[in-house]
Length: 165
Image 1 (cartoon, one colour):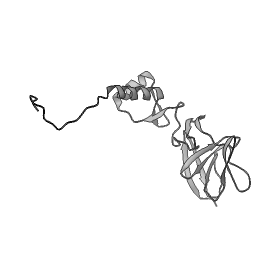
Image 2: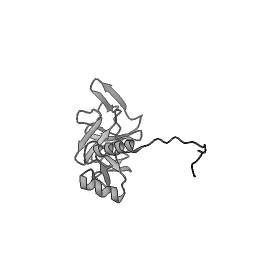
Image 3: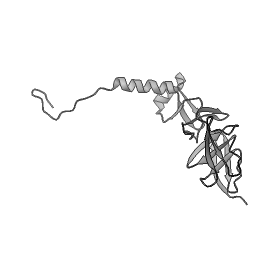
Image 4: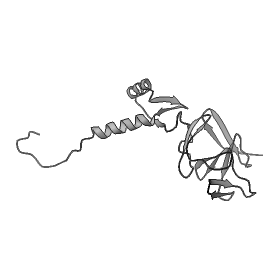
């Protein structure tokens, strides 16, 4: 009999993996002694001892989530799924495994109500998969604004004659 190991919620879908090695809805959990990473000119894949490989499914390995396409190769970059967009770093680890982004390149933000109303009215923020997401363009605008408004202050502990403190 299988024992439930973990449940992952992606978008509005829930996935579960069992201790008997079978997974539901395309999820796999692997450890170092179960298989091995392989690489060729096309990219990386994860191969099981019987010669098969992970394909069309998510796999958790070493605390990270990876996705393998139909051809078995690990994904990198921004990729769109039915539940939204996921970002995978150069090593294939998913950077937003708990919540898919509404669009490529968007970031989860924690907003105050005043900032949020402005961002919603301009389309720079949307509520998706239980989080507020910010467009990369808006994030860059805010960083540019912060850089422009920064005034370096030279601190001195010297008293200046004629200045009332």
